[in-house]
Length: 519
Image 1: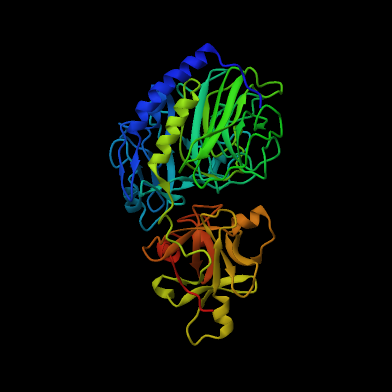
Image 2 (image 1 turned 90 degrees about the horizontal axis):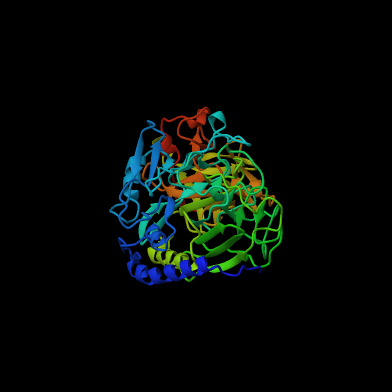
């Protein structure tokens, strides 16, 4: 690993940060069994004390300042297109998920704004088209389903930002974000089990025109298993830096052995840079300390020294609006100045103490269980999802039904093929064949091992939209849920251009009771 001789300025900064860190660690969030106490110091307080204040602070799960009580994010519900801001339950605390649950009851919601807690208005909104178009109207990117990533902080239910391919957020007109070769730092908390090899699941500094403006015009955290430009040890995923026209794991253009595969359920990822010097750090957001995976000179490729950062902020996409990536974001910040390791170590201690967890977050059927999925709409409570060959529909099944009918309506719950936090449904009588959507309709197909199949066959359980059982959001179209319509089965949004997207009875039609399997 290449390293630089520390400058006097850097040594002084590290000493100052170390002095602050001891005091700040006494003020981190204290997490207990189902409780958490608002902190006197949160991540952005710690960065400020270290001399590298936050210039952007985004989170849908908690406040990142001990005194912050403003909105964290905004949701829009499909039933009437009204919006609601979601704030912490108190200053410096966790998000008020109960307000979101009440507002979104019986319908679906999208995250429209992720507010900036610094007061600089560096909020993130729906990304516009750029070098690539997104799938939404006008070439914009999709917005994230507001209920697709439920987790807990300190035992309290909150929601993350579930990025399926095609989803993206951006701000091209920012205030105070590093430009040119100016120093900056950034961290993000991701779901380390939700990723792909698409380009590019990023959070950080990007081009202000949503296009590829050449080497060194970006500096963002990347997380995933893409090996086209760079990679580290093992099979991935890796924390890398997206510096435009390259994902870098160290000083070399492609392979760097010091950057390990890392996939903690809650992952702390850090990238920071200053003139001819940058670093990658990471660790488990639930326990332990940070590791340093690279700390040294800029890549040994033309165009990255000096850097030409432009100062936009992206989430879930590449700098040119490439939209093939998948991941889940919980919180992240960007700083003015290059943070010391000591400051970041204190931030990591705060993150661990916050108590991220998954207990009770989905309430879906248990992996390994055998279930039959019963409709809850008043017309159809004796109907179950069933297959006949590749065709999937709902069928009436009862104790007097034939053994074949019972078997066709029975499935084994598997860990999600594309995201282990979600589920996939394998037919009991057709080993290796799963429910998957194709052109929005459900079929039973044999697993071909492709990433597309895995995504199409993965569904994320939530509390039933009508209050019964579960609703199952598509992993790669998280605003669409498994729905029965005229006895056929689709993934459907609440309102849309297809007949099965009709708003009438939507909440009932997308709610299913996972009953004991008929077979």
